[in-house]
Length: 624
Image 1 (cartoon, rainbow, N blue to C red):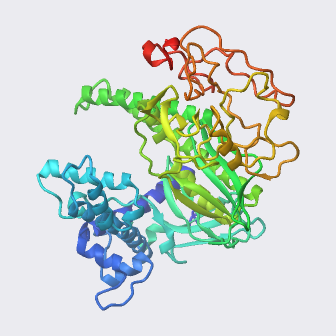
Image 2 (spheres, rainbow, N blue to C red):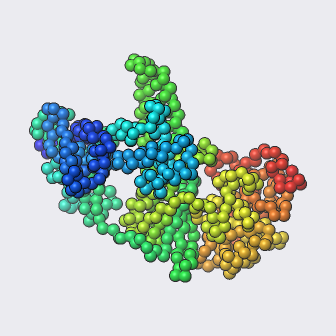
């Protein structure tokens, strides 16, 4: 509502007036960045000290005024000093963030490799030593800066002096930072009776080029708070931005939360990533004697349906982009071309698909983060260990799989987990991804990842082979292993009969005893009774696709051979019959009697048959 005239403003009218103020602020911020986009000014601002050695204020607008970076509106435009503060705050934050990019670009230029597309080990060590925090810097960030410098080299035939020569002055975000203002420009207060409602008051221009202070009036904007904001939280002035013709307020608030502990954790939750099973989690307890035991069953956050919809939207967006590029080539620069109207409609459709993908990714990130934190709260964990895959480069797994992996919102989920865990007083530790899948999580045996169990020399990622224990299995849950055994059973023994298992043996004793046998597994069996602390998985989380040596057609096992878990069949013959499940194991259905599905199917079944040369299928001449 306009307090001067008492007129109720429509949503479009309010968005228009906020947009006018944002235009004024963006214009001043652009001119300020263009005037000081150089290495000397950015270094002085990032150093935190002025020319006299005094410490610069933390607020960006105050630091710029201390350094003498002044700015003003265009001639004839009248704005108050608080609007100038907002422009200086926007430009100062952008200039401060450029310091890290400048140091990284300088490190890449100083250690420029002989072949930019492939660094050697010595060149990687050199660039990490020169870059700020290079020891923990993801390789993808360094590669991105290297590609940027390589483009400059191709265009100019030389290396850039610094990032300010390689990049133009950035355009600040079209946003109104009210945090740089005081009560003379904007105020915020809660409703007296309803703490879920607040009133935001701010001055907005009535026209795009205000000539006097009379062209600025106070506008009252009631806002409804989401239920996630506590009633006792201290509210701060929000940031206003325009989103699809509506005004969005990014509201910050402060409230007390439990303090997280850096050390002394006894119960922890480990979270690992997947594709169809987006997140897998399992809790563990550290005892006084140094023994680590698993707590009950593991959990999985499966988002196959959401991810499938995400991939459909991605493919739709790619087709629309290709169509738009085709229209642009056909129309050229003609203003009266018949395809201009279709091109405009297509642009709106592309924007709508992009918005749907953004909303879906945001909802998926919040849902996954909430699930992980809830698992930690339920297990009584005080720390969450999360594999750091925010900058993973998907490669080597085929075009389709690489694209699907690169579209997963791992960075957003990690940020949401940190935010929600802080409210619960739970610490979050990111674990480097290197060598996290190198060893078996239960017996610490080094694994060899291969494309298929009957192709032990072809590198891959779907199958894990135990070189010494002669076991092959498909790691479904990655970091949280909950797998069934994949070994042949002696005649007359039921693989699902709990009476014919080795109870009471430790994991080390079982692995040691099994080294002398033909095949083995590296897990302990499920005991009967209530769920307690134990070092083995729950039985209801067992992989469905299982195949053991002797159950696959056209294969004759030989002494010392490897067991094939889920190996493709090479003929129409049915697999060997499987014993009936024991009582209480009805959910563990036989899988070898199912018809093979297609590769694009989402079901966890055996892959379809694929023709091969006879010499690569069997393990002996009899199997050919």
